[in-house]
Image 1 (cartoon, rainbow over the protein chains, first blue to last red):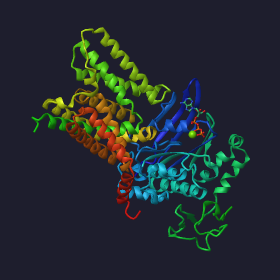
Image 2 (image 1 turned 135 degrees about the horizontal axis):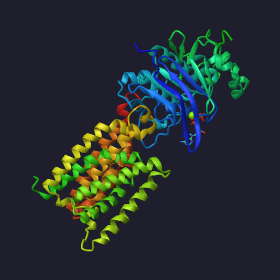
Image 3 (image 1 turned 180 degrees about the vertical axis):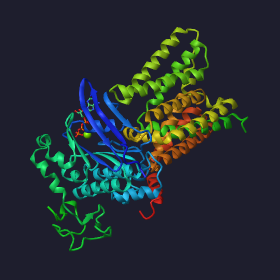
Image 4 (image 1 turned 180 degrees about the horizontal axis):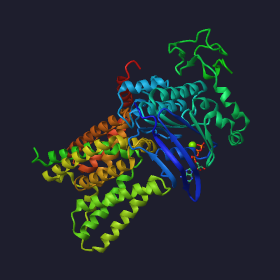
Length: 283
Length: 275
Ligand SMILES: Nc1ncnc2c1ncn2[C@@H]1O[C@H](COP(=O)(O)OP(=O)(O)OP(=O)(O)O)[C@@H](O)[C@H]1O
Ligand SMILES: [Mg+2]
């Protein structure tokens, strides 16, 4: 069993200064095993910088960053450019920083829905597919600490929800500690233990509902942000996989939806993300 | 068989080609094609300094190449210039410095042709021993740093975040490059070694679906170029070094042909049953 009391990483009053300007300052943050901590905030508010401090890629110019050397880390960066001249298949990309058994790699790719692209060259992947590959690679490493910088950017709507659910499930099952950066307030909120709202400094932090009720948070994100919680509290009984098949609540996979499934606009079979609506039971 | 100068040349050339394959792949992947030329100029400075301080040439060439490659790494991190601009900067500085140093020593007459093309037909048994011992050492170290080095080539950020120490791998790679240049320069010349680094790797790209595969194919193409070039030079009485380069270029051109496109497709099909 992992020791769930000791944080995997902790930042104390940490700040980064570049070119005479504080990029971010006064960050207090700790991630424990099994916990998802989400960073939100407008563009340029220092979210990625904070993540890089937590990863030990930047040493804070003020305050401390602590991380045990034994902590196994996986990282999904916000942007990454891969030279198209590299001979690199998805399968090889999965093994980039760790030795994986083929079965482990396949399982991770299956969980993010791109197992069929195993042999594809990375440079031919679409934006969303590549993002799924990045996430699969990070998960397959079986890390202690997972840092996800906008992991579902460019992923279709149904896929976003499925991936966030995946992150949530594996965190609970495997006890990973997750530092998540996201703009998708409505999706993120319910699956998070702690939210830290950044704006060059920590503007507020706490449980999702506490943050959603915070006046500074409302000023930063506007009134619509308050709806974020309500939107997430819904129930979906099936998920559309990228290859067109459908995964149901009980885990079974079929080619089509059942008529009794959460209702659809359009005819259902071979669906695009846009034709899927989730049943909102308790909203 | 080692008593025959032609066999010695082939054996030496094959040794260099085997090492140059994988090293050249990294040069190509990292867009450092001019790295070879930069080190060639560094080698000239090394030779000049060896005359000046009366030290071993190979050692001096290694030292100067190592300094220049580490300087490249440092500049890549600090300066906001692209790698090709930095390589140009280092290359011309080393060349100019080398020429200035040589000008001080009016009594030295340097054999520039020998430096550029070496003389593979004059390879001795000791040279062969040096190539194979050095080559084996270089390949062994390369195997050890392969994972972090390749990860750093794909994404420095990922490699660093996930604890692979990309900077350490980069420095070791640069030292390996300096070693290869220092050993190979005297024997096969700087032009030949840069050609053997880049051209086989470029020709191998099309047939490879993975980095390890590409490294092996590049080595094999290099070996083929050495054998083809040397036999060609024997047959048509052409200069040996340039003939090897011409053979490598020939392989590259063949790799562009429709026939090899077909072979490459067959190769990748074999790996994907049912795809
Ligand atoms: N190396 C650097 N030197 C100077 N300024 C920097 C550097 N890195 C980042 N910045 C600045 O720091 C600020 C915070 O950047 P950061 O990438 O952390 O923002 P972010 O919250 O992740 O934004 P986004 O939502 O757009 O991803 C930005 O204003 C950026 O311009
Ligand atoms: Mg960012």
